[in-house]
Length: 259
Length: 280
Image (tube, rainbow over all chains, first blue to last red; front, side, top):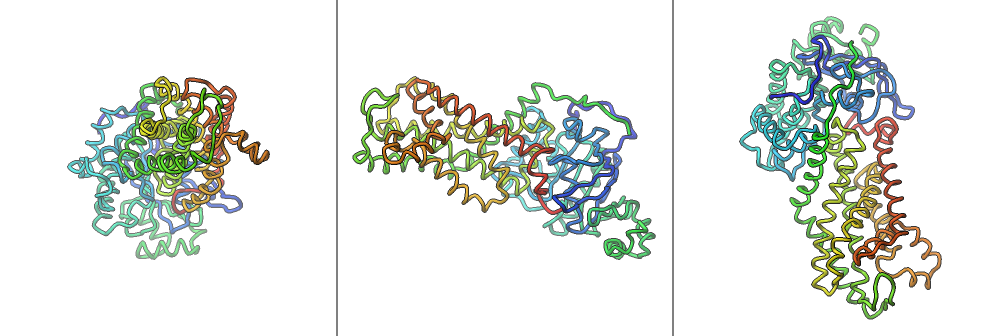
């Protein structure tokens, strides 16, 4: 991808995403309690948690679907609540549910998204083609989204999220409903992006087999961060030989104190 | 952590690009959905060709402004049917917004760095652009059915169509923030579209309604749709219905402000209801 959109100078040390002490409730139901995590640039952080852990709510707050009333969320140093424009310009998102327009072509979907980022038609078109090339779908740019498989549609959504060259990429259960090959393909593309483009990725999932040994893991359960650290560290803390066992133990409340 | 000022400002050309993109997508979607275009056109035409023909002999319309002579019932009912086109289009866009919210497409819009009010107004104007295509297509066919307003009327009706479309679109936008699920849309038909349409001056002049029920007459007078229809009726003959204009402007402002409030991330309804667009 080429020129970024109106990017201001940024210190090297600033995290792509910084969440600090965020809590959120729906009525009397507390969904997030004092959640803190950070995603450095060029890092792949897995937000691991069972269904209902609060992952999507956290994403809704980071993407400012609604405001966080307590705590602080910063994207590349910009506070989401105070400077939403500057913060959201640095954010790319792949939502859990499909959000492409089936009646439009891949190219039309992507140029629409470019427009939502304030990118003009010609530049948007060029960026769309480049982004589709990166996910291996440039030859199908003029086909309607309806003709794509689930895995291909996900790749288009990734291309769309990267169109405006963001520093931070959020993916919410991006492999749900995909077969094994498509899941692998999506994960490979994202990991490659982390390496090549210095993007900080927060990958939310409930599937432990999507976690690689080098990944940084944030384990969310019942709205609380139960563990944050490397995979070997998690295995050690949970006194488990496999990640699956560690995950079960931590989400089974036994390690709430230890973490 | 270093605090950064919001130096990544969006300039005018970015706003224009965003606005064009949103409007273009609405038009493109509409053109791609041929069935939608067809049904949007067939609905008022059925009323014009069949209902109006049947009622021509039953319902006499006396000379009332803006008409300067006796007019066919088809001529009287046409502004109401144009209003119906706008009403259905607005509600359909409301339906699409509820659907977009369920699928996540709405979140794609809302995660844009532009101010939310700008995004919502742009989407609204995109819907109005689609409604204009439908309304003019209907007026063109109606022309060959002896509904022949002065040629200048086709130009003077444009601002009335835009304003009425905006009012109904803003109402739909507000409703889309309140409707939780797509299934509830049947309720919208029963509780919003039909009462708004029938309790208005779209099908019969208000003086006729007053003769049969003073209460219904008052309800019709309070119905914003009545004033949208009257605004269109007068504009089609190059005249301004001043009271209706003021009322439509007032309702547009109110509905729009309420819709923007409902979608406001810090004050709106979405956060309170916990719509994260998926699981938790």
